Each structure stands twice: as C-alpha cells, then as structure tokens.
Length: 274
Image 1 (cartoon, helix red, strand yellow):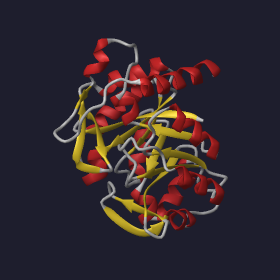
Image 2 (tube, rainbow, N blue to C red; image 1 turned 30 degrees about the vertical axis):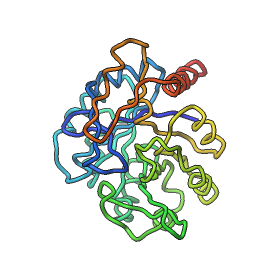
Image 3 (tube, rainbow, N blue to C red; image 1 turned 90 degrees about the horizontal axis):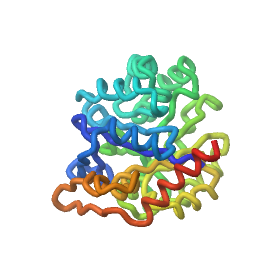
Image 4 (tube, rainbow, N blue to C red; image 1 turned 60 degrees about the horizontal axis):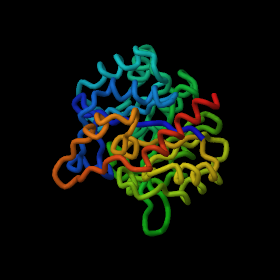
C-alpha cells in the first residue's frame, strides 16, 4: 500500500485544518517547496496537494505556486481544490501535475465529470468524496470544503458515474481528518466490498505505521497522511524539525515521537522495494 504525504495550501502557506474547519487551522513554518523535497528525501513518490483557497471560494493565488512545485519534477503531484472546469484540469496537467482531484463537481455535475474522465483519461483524474457517517451508519457526502450537505451517500454518488469510467477515488472521513484518532477502517472495508474495481485512497486519522498495516488489510491502494507527518516530523533528525509546526490558539502541537519515525521508515522501506 502506498503512503502519500499531503500538504494543504492556504494563502501560499502549509496548513492543516481540524475536521475541515477553517477556524481551526494550524500553520506550518516550512515552505511548501522545502516540504516537497524533504518528502522526496524520505522516499515518497507522490505528494497530495490541496488548494484550500480555491476549494472554499474559487480564488486565491496558490495555482502559481502549485505550477512551480510541479515544475520541480521531484515527486508526482496529485492536486485538488476548486476544480470546476476542464480548463482547470488541462492547466494543471500541462504544468506537470500527474493527477487532478475532482471533488464537489463529481457530486453536483456527474455528467460533466464523466466527460472529463473520457477526455483526460481515468488515470489522470481522481474523484474525491468527503463523508460524514450519519446516525443510520451511512457515509454521506459533503461538498465545497465540507460546508454543504449533498444529500447523497458515498455509494449513491459513485453510482451516478458511468461504469468503468472511474479508477481512482479518494475518500476522506471528515470526523477523523486532522484529529489523529485513527482511520475509519470499517468505511474503507465497505468501500472495497461495494466497489472492488476502484483504487481507493484513505484519508483522515492516520497516526502511525500500525494504522497503515490495518488499512493495508482492507485492500485499499493508498493512504494519505497530512498531520501525522507534518506534526511529528523527524525527517533528518535535526533540531530544525522541532520548529516546523506553529500552532494557533487552541491547537496544541505534538512534537516528534515514535509515530513519525514509523511513518518515515514506511516511506523509506517503500523506496527500497521499488
């Protein structure tokens, strides 16, 4: 199973949100390009980038930064946030992005997204569904930076796309995202049972290598980890890594412990096997 580090971008800076709440933001002192190169040194082959400004209101200046990062050709980039038109996808792919993540549009205009999949190919587009598990136990999709309820279950949203048109699906459990509480293993096991032909990516709650081992048992293709790698970085083991996290009030920062080393060693082991 692939481990994909994640960076969320807001106003050109690396941040993490707690459960998608823009008021519960943790900012990081490290530059996005610096983090990308550190992840490459650890052994990562992919990096997941989210443009939070575009995801929230369609604006911001992160696109230029993302294109610059893609131009480094250091890692394969999977980029999402505010993808609302074919032009957005074409621009990112032309800039060197390996795969574009489509979220809200996949729920609101499945016919349009089906046309994008046909045009650009299912290997170049990953559909992203952010879900909350409701009282009846069904994962229900939210859109627009998790601010709007779609009224659809994850299964219903996927069922609106033509059979065979989709390959990659990123599923985030909103309640677990940024909470360091462990992934929703039952959700991903159910996803594989219902749609075994899809390459599922799990996001939300990953803490350590033990979580990765449990996720691998479900059969998913990849796990996306943001906070666990950012907040518990050891990277080179230098004292610098202790200064990477700058928490806002109410968001205490956890410094290096054994979980960081485990995730870093997972990336290194993947590199040695490749």
